[in-house]
Structures are given as C-alpha cells and as structure tokens.
Amino acid sequence: MTGGGFLARNIAGFTQALESVVVTEDLCHAPGLMQGLDPRIKVVTLMLFIILVGLAQDFTLLIAIFILALLLVLLSKIPIALYLKRLLIFIPIFTAVIAIPALFITPGTPLLSIAGKAVITAQGAHTAGLLIMRVVDSLSLGLLLVFTTPWTKLLQALRWLRLPSLVVDILGMTYRYIYLLLHTANSMFLARQSRTIGGFSGTENRRWLGRALVTTMVKSQYLSEEVYLAMLSRGYQGEIHTLNELTLRRRDFIWMAFALAAISLMVWSIYL
Amino acid sequence: MISLDNTLIYKAKDLYYDYLGNIPALRNICFNIGAGELVALVGANGSGKSTLLKILDGLLFPTSGELMAFGTRLSEKILETGNLAAEFRRRVGLVFQDPDVQLFSPTVWDEVTFGPLQLGISKDEVISRANETLEVLNISSLRERPPYLLSGGEKKKVSLASVLSLRPQVLLLDEPTTGLDPWSQGNLIDFLLQWADKGKALVFSTQDLDVVEEVATRIIVIGASHDIVADGMPEEFLSDSDFLLRNNLIHEHSHRHKELVHRHPHLHEHMHEH
Image (cartoon, rainbow over all chains, first blue to last red; front, side):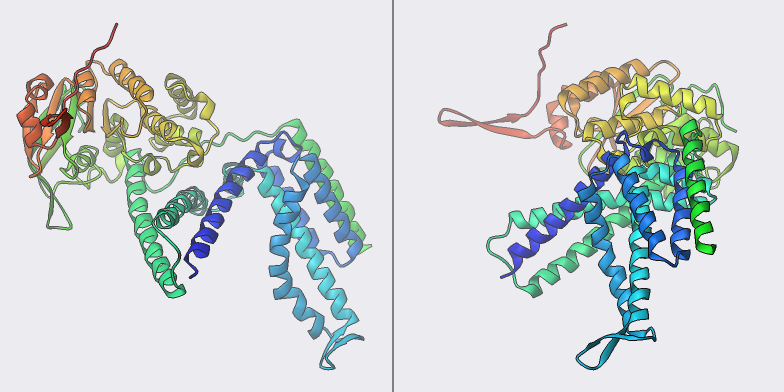
C-alpha cells in the first residue's frame, strides 16, 4: 500500500518545482546589485571567473572567490539560506563522481587507511579538496547568474554571444513549455489522488506512471504541432527575428572594470 | 498576386477536409466572406470549426475544393515563403483557442513583437505598434511577464495582442470568450465591435449564442455532418429553437414545478439597462 505516499510525494515534487520557478523569477527582479547589470556583461564576467576557478591551484584563491560570490549574493538581496540550500543540492552529486575517486587514486603519502585496504593519501585529500572547492565556486557563480538574470535576458545574452539562433530558440521554448507540462503532470497526479482511497501496490503505481508518461508525451507532441502552426500563422519562415534592446549603462562599465581588475589580480597571483 | 482593394476576402468552393485521410472534418463547404462582415461560425463540439479557421489562415489545406483569399488561390506552395506569404500573414491573424499554444515566446513583449518582426517591419515601427497594442488592451503592465505566470484571462488578452500587432485586415478567433469571466467577456465584445470597420472582417467560432447575438452580422452553422446547415443573418436562426435544438446548439431543460416535471428548450432572454 504505497499509493498515497507515491502520489503525495510526486505532487509535492511538482508543486515545489513550480514554486521554485516563481521564486527564482521574483529574485531576478529584486532591486539588487547583480540584477541591475546588463546580462551580457554578467555572462562574460562570471564565465571569466569560472575559467579562473578551473585554473586555480591553491585554496586561498578559491576561498577568496567563494567569499566574493557570497558578498555578491548579499548585495543582490538573495536570501542566503535559499542560496546555500540550492548549492548543497548539487555539491554531493559532483563530489561523489569526481572528488571521492581522487582521494584513493592519487599517489602520495598515506594519510588514512580504511579497513586496511583502501588508502587515502595526503596528495589525494589535497586534490579532492581542490576539486570540491572548484565545484563550490563554479556552482556559486552559476547560481548567482541564474538567481539574478531573468531567463529571457539570459537568452538575449546567449544570442549576443553568437550561440546559434536555433539553439537559443529551442532553449527558450523548452523552458516555457516545461512549466506547462509540469502543470499538466501535476493535474494528472491530483486527479488520480482525488479518486484514490487507500493506496496501490508498487506494480500498479509503476504501470500508472508509465501511462501518465505516455499521455504527457502525446500531449506535448500535439502541443508542439499546434505551436508550430501558431508560429507560421504569425509569419515564421524558419528563423526567429528578435529585437535586441540591451544597452550598456555606467554601472555595467564600473562592474566590468572591477571584475577585470579582480580577475587580473587573481591570474597574476597564480603565476607569481 | 494578392489584390489590395478587393472587398471579397474569401471565396470557398466545395471544401472538404479529412484528418488522417479518412476522418471527415469538413464537407462541401461553400461561402463568400467580404470586407465589413462579422461572421460567427457556430456548431457543436467536433463539427470542424477550428479546422475551418486554420484553413482560412492558410495553416491547413483542403483535401479537395478551392479557397481563394484576396483573389489568390491559397496553396501550401504560395504560403511557404516569399512576399505573397508575408503579405497574407500580415493581412490575416488567427487567435488560437488555447492561449498556451499561441504564447510561445519568453515574455509578453516578445510575444507582441514576434509577428511584426518576422514580417520584416522596421524595429521602430514594431516597438510603436507593440506599445500601442498593449495600451489598447490595457495590458502594458504585463510587458515583462513570462506567459506561464499569467492568469487565463490575461493569456487570452495577450494572445489577441500578439495578433493585433500585425494590424490584420482579417481577424480569425477560435472560441475567443471561452474561459473568460463575464466582465472580461464584455470587454472583449466591446473591443471587437470597436475594432471592426468597413475594410475589415471578423470570423470567430463560438458556442455562445449570446456572443453571436451581440457581435455577429452573419452566422454560419456547421452541422454534425460537417457541412454548412445554415448561413444568414443571426436573427433568422437564433429565434428558431427547433433548428437550434436539432443542431445541438441548445439543450432541452428539465425542471420541476411542484409535482410536474417540465421540459423546454433552454434559451436566455436578456434584460439590461443602457
């Protein structure tokens, strides 16, 4: 009898996903430091910081970048608890895949032995630590961009960076319709819960889930055909033309000067 | 060549349309629609109204028969690319029944500017048209909002705005009042009546006979057999309850008067003050 829990868990998951979209959208329009910057400048400077993180070899620099990211989070009026929560969701995934093997496979001075078989080396611990810090820094900077830039502006910036128009358009429409399909899936689960007394076995749940997936796929296919017709109806002929209304302001140049100075200083410290 | 001063906009002759080659959607459709007409397409669910609107918008093409628009026979080849296609798209706008189909752009502003931009209209003109359209429909405050965060009524208005920014001569609306509250419905009707003038044509599908009565100057009824069963002035047919019952446009209403169960066609008579 797992039906109630199964449905409730999924409904909660869908609702949380829908809410998080709304929360992120609100944060993007908060009157903070990063929200006021041109998305192109933000994408370029934060990407430069991320490249720097990849090159960094010592903890001091990586910690300095993390502190800078946290400072920018605070100045951008993003609730720090929400930010750290999002950060912590992703870190274990990357850590498990990259950092844990490094603990054991890096040759060097033995530091700790587990059950007399696996040995963690000092160099392994250092490499794993560096990898984790790099992940933390890169995610911090990535989240900063996502939390302070509306999706639509991010797409405009990607278009400006010469990412192929088709890729940008598909990304935009995917994001827009994921929200709609989340709603559809949520309604299907709610409709089933409203007709459920007690629960169903795991097998029945899996069977129902399979049918729900197929239904959602058929609906999304129908939707894609109709959307294409709606685009044709308004003159689409294979390539989407858009207005480029982004303009650079004084604050963008100030931020760019600061970011480039900081990055230069950090690069200099690496090769000093 | 699309004629620019033709008062006859559409001429449909023996249109047939089948889905998947054997599911009939339209049968033997013939009509002319001229500038200045406000045409209501009425019919029960599944009668083929939406399919007909898509054919009038050059999105679907009849299995057989001929549709002339502005003096030109519409075909897939003509509407594929080029000036003729752009001219047709500029002059005819379709508002889909489901706003989630219509609203595919990231923001309301992108949505309203989409059509004119695709048709090569200058950027200054696009911005001016988009601002004006948002203002006319009183939705300027929604400009930066993503469509998925709009209410149902707001989505309908933005859908309409996305087509009006093309400044079309022919407006095709698929069930425009469905899902709107009475206030928004009234606003939409007022807007449509203001929008229409001698040079323009409005063709809308609906099942709401009150809207037909308020807006349309002509009614085309599509029957269960997917053909036209009536075409004329709305008042000719709206008062004929037998005809409306036969075509599933009204239902027989049962209710109790003390001990007696009473059945009669369900029609609304309005009383309102001016």
